[in-house]
Length: 334
Picture 1 (spheres, one colour):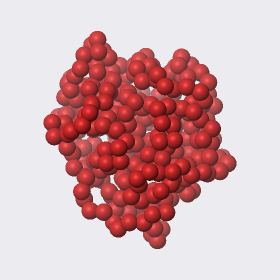
Picture 2 (cartoon, one colour):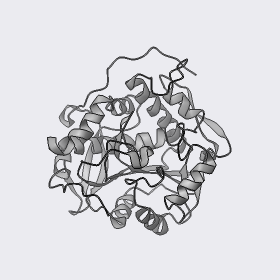
Picture 3 (cartoon, helix red, strand yellow):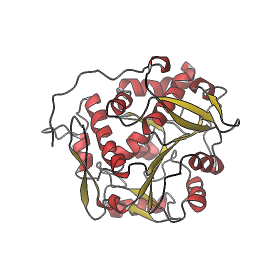
Picture 4 (cartoon, one colour):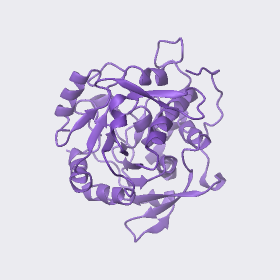
């Protein structure tokens, strides 16, 4: 494994859209937060999803209040992915999903019982190469990952205690790394046993390189859907201990470009009013989360320029500011 000096703060900066350069990707957007909206968004970007399909989903700790609703995922899979499996990995921290036995119980508690769930590191780990990485030349992932031909990253976009925000990059980079080896490589500086004592931007870079290993493996057969709903500053790995949601719900985005979709979500949060985005934006800034975006661009993983296509208005091209207009305050569901 590679070892490099701790990096500085280069790259942790929110870059306004007009200052970005490069080709434009396409990101689709709907305000329809429902199973129908999820299906509509996914069907824009599923053209190369074929063969044995894994749906990478954060299934959450027990009784987590903010995960993507099971009914939405069930409807999507029944309509468009009837032969697919949800795929997950065990956690690096000790909690409700630390062992496979604990993980299976948590899946049952949380209602992920309508289709097969493959805990891909249940049996073993394997490594995938990383081209051009600063920290790694390979990443350890669950061994079952290689059994799949296509990957659908179905992501609950929200804040994250260490990453600043959790989008498609976090869902894949942490979520496909196995629970004992890969996640330890990402979270721990060599020679440092404390998983939280790691430079902020080093963590972003390690996580992003892990993502690159997986999406390079799938090539064109990977696609991304981000659900901007119940966006606590906390990750779903915090379960019922997650911070209260104070950011308004937005909608669902989809793309075949991982950088473009995560960048669009961040842009929409930025375009909210100060009152609406204060907590979530502070979480992104304080954790140096923007380094996820700049490092994906440096590694050639996608584009930070994009066309945002409004599926609710005949495919009209809109801006992130348009998507952030007239948002309704979050209301806790009963």
